[in-house]
Length: 124
Image (cartoon, rainbow, N blue to C red; front, side, top):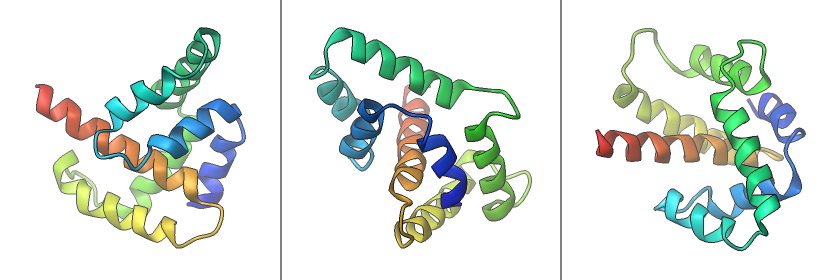
């Protein structure tokens, strides 16, 4: 999995990577992100926001992040699982990725997605 996320990482600016590293394990990811992003000048905040929107909302089946998520799905998840049922496998993937060299951003991406998913579920 790490090699897949590495191709995504290579396309991100150093500012975006730094923010992900600083906030990816925060209990309240969104608050941590807002606090860290506020430390950037406005043009860099816009750039980082654009990169993340492209990353998470890409939607293109040929986009690197989408490919990684599809690979993750086929590796860790049975078909027809709900998001809630996927959480243990997401956690397993994160723990496995933590043990691999050069995989930090990959598991932080997944950790962020779990956090955002939990927050979205709470707001519904």
